[in-house]
Image (cartoon, rainbow, N blue to C red; front, side, top):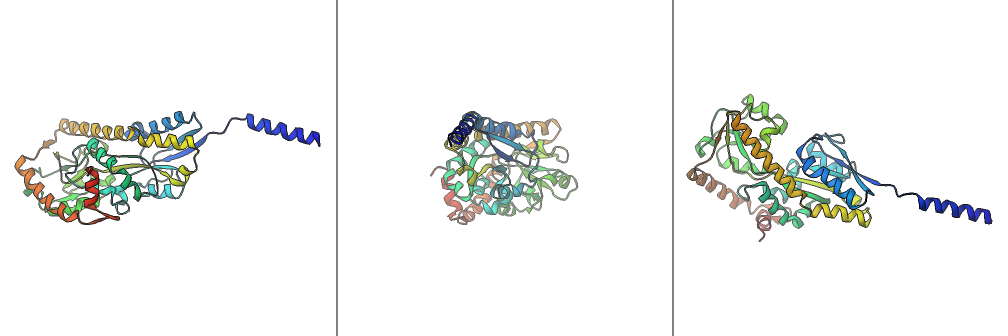
Length: 327
């Protein structure tokens, strides 16, 4: 009996002496490992979590769609537990995230940093439409318009065009300006403009470099009636709830850090580089005159008056706009 008790005690001592095994969180994203958002947010996120937990909690990357390559499916694989953390684009499934999509309305903000600041101001409300822990939340810049055959300098130039829109929030504004909105996957926009399937591409300026839009395009109108695209890094709620206090604190620190703003500023810089690259390649960069911009803004304001009364989940679009503006 004494021998048995001694053996149990010895085993217990050995078990207690063993170092705790590090826990690993899986991070899925559909872009390649060299994507700028990896450098701006995803890698620093993992480094911060590991540092804050003394290596007890780490993040393993699954880039390039290794767990699922469809942008619109990233939220689903997080909910289903295929990945613990995902990088997602809410505009890909905007009907699920009507509050988040409000920042994509025109004339709310002018730069990625300004738009991100507004988005973070309303984060407590926006978070209610996600069944997960928001770890990162930021935007790129509002869109430019890239065209092949027709330089867009006035409202009249827009009328009759077929314009690729990035998400449904742009549709009523494009229609009010007299153009036809077209939904085309971003991976196909280069070829669609080159073949004349569409007349213009509405996209944030970082897309010039990402999709080589200087090749089919000849003109860039350096503003168009749309808002900023949003990006979210979300964590499975059950996984977050199952972390120990140190793990939760580390994830919370990432969520409260300036990494989201760092990601927004990187998008802004890439957008500036894209515009400079387009100009170097011979594309004409067009600015609306104050008079022409005023005419377009009048049309936008009329549509906004209608859109503001529409539902955004359990609130109205106007309610969310007020929160974005800190009101």
